[in-house]
Image 1: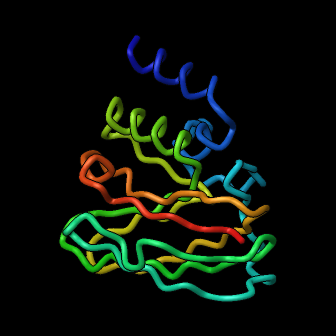
Image 2: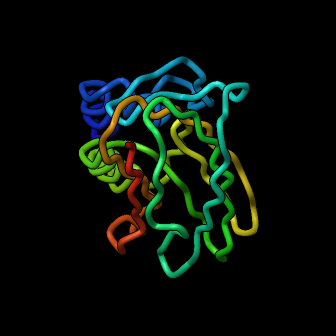
Image 3: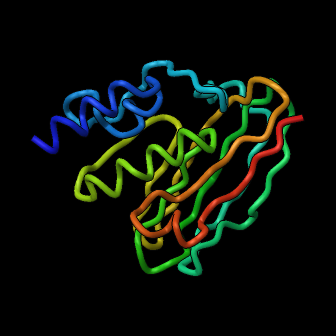
Amino acid sequence: MKTIKSLLLALSMSPMLATAAGMEGNHAHHDAAIKSAAGQPGDPDKVTRTVNVAMRDTMRFTPEAIVVKAGETVRFVVRNLGKVDHEMIIGTASELQAHAQMMRNMPADKHAGPNQVTLAPGQQGTLVWQFARPETVDFACLVPGHFEAGMVGKIVVR
């Protein structure tokens, strides 16, 4: 019953959260074009630049702040330099907070989405995202406990 309530809660939120949380049925990677206030999945053929991001067990990203241009499509090359799993998820502050709550409620649930990359220790992955308009959006690690420990960053879209 708790899982059903969590599923209904997830589906009542934005489509981005339902997809990012892997709630689309089989928990497989979902490539459908989702949109969020934070932007949308980017076309890898239209990448205008690459930003390297490191994740560490100090519960910090390097860099913690990134500046991009409105309309820009960015490839994030994300490396887990720690000894525990980490992830980078792009979203608005409210989307990330809601997703973090879902992760606390369902810690064993695996999820995937075009706005995130989840990596085991020593792994590297990529995330391609297009930023729509001037604003500040967030990124975070939503592995239970990491978000609460301050593993967050900002993307300033100019």
